[in-house]
Each structure stands twice: as C-alpha cells, then as structure tokens.
Length: 67
Image 1 (cartoon, helix red, strand yellow):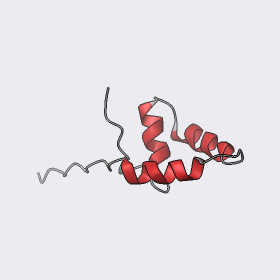
Image 2 (cartoon, one colour):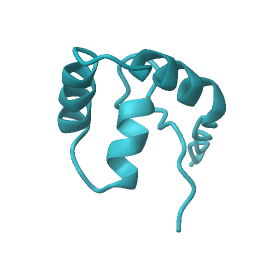
Image 3 (cartoon, helix red, strand yellow):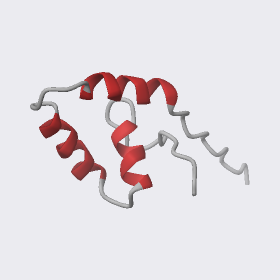
C-alpha cells in the first residue's frame, strides 16, 4: 500500500482532497464535492480536514534534469 501524500500539483487549498482522490483512484473533483456536501451535515469534517492537512506529508518535488 502506497503512502498517502499531498501532491505538489493539482491541489486547491491544502491538497488533502487530491491526496485522498489519488489514494482511492477517483477524481479530485469528486472528493471535493463529497467533502463540501459532508460539511452541510453536523460533525467535525472541517477539523478532520485541518488535521489531515497538518499530518499528511507533502510530496517531494522531483528535480528537473539539467540536460
């Protein structure tokens, strides 16, 4: 199982939804919509997002070859 990391590209705010979308092989748009809809329900969704933003490591950018 691959580690979940926040991608360096394709992220909107913190990259949490993009990381979860990559992990579950779905589109980031779908995860973002599900998150937005879930925020309408009572619960700690926003706090969970903040916790994942802090806890998930950022993806390391690969250096470009100087050819």
